Image (tube, rainbow, N blue to C red; front, side, top):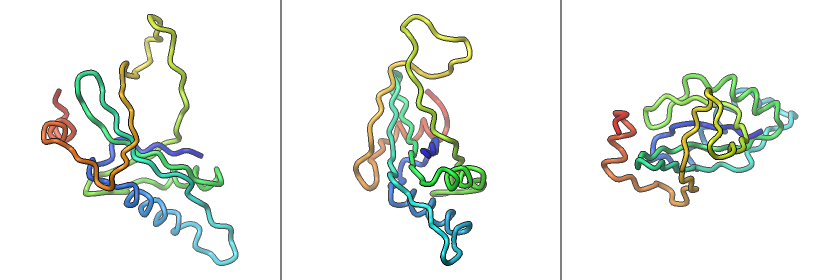
Length: 136
């Protein structure tokens, strides 16, 4: 199961995110002789829209799916770098035909999505200010 963790702090590394997930899974699956869940991939994604707003999100694969569902249900009150996080199941969505968009669709057009490869992504001051204070 893929788990989406929106709006992680920009100074977060994939190693820190993986440790957070591992610690939470340890709370449930620490009994001897039980099969432990595995964390497949743990990636940080950088979203930049056409207005220049930058957001960072986590994408984690957890196996088996039951462990992923448990993790989502028990992800409450998790903090990373002082920021409260939440998790949900990742939804693979297809883009709609250009010019046709349902009214309830809140996805933004023209998103540039990149995997963050460095341990601590560099964030310029303007991006950091936008993330913290929600201005454009």
